[in-house]
Image 1: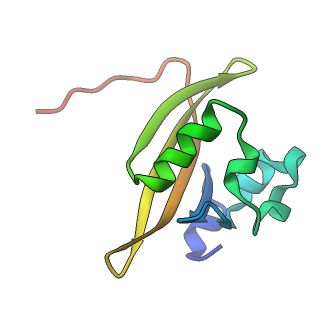
Image 2: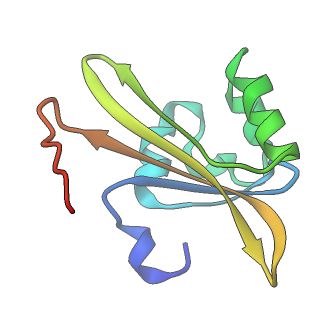
Image 3: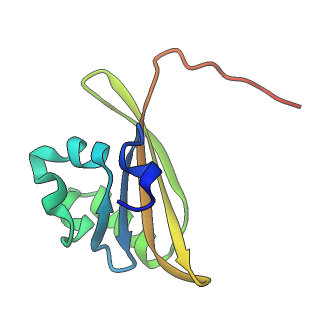
Length: 112
C-alpha cells in the first residue's frame, strides 16, 4: 500500500474505486478480512463482501458519494467504521474505508 505510513497503520484501511473494485488494503485490513481472502480481495467488488442491508447502503454511497460513519460491535469489541469518498484531480474516484477499534471507556473531550 502506498503511502508507506499506511501499510502498518493500526487501523484497517481499504480503498476502492468508484465502481466498488478494491484497489488497496493495508496490513490490518488484510488481517481483518483474512477469512474472506485477505489481500486476494484486491480486484474484487467490495459490494460482494457485504450482506444486505449493508450492501444496498454501500451501493448508494458509491453512487451518491458521502461520508458514512457508524460504530459496530463484534465479539464484545467496538469498531468505528468511517467510509468517505476520495478524489483525484477534483473528480470522485472511490471510497476509503477505515475501521478502528474503539476502547470501551473512551474519553469524551469538549474543546472551546
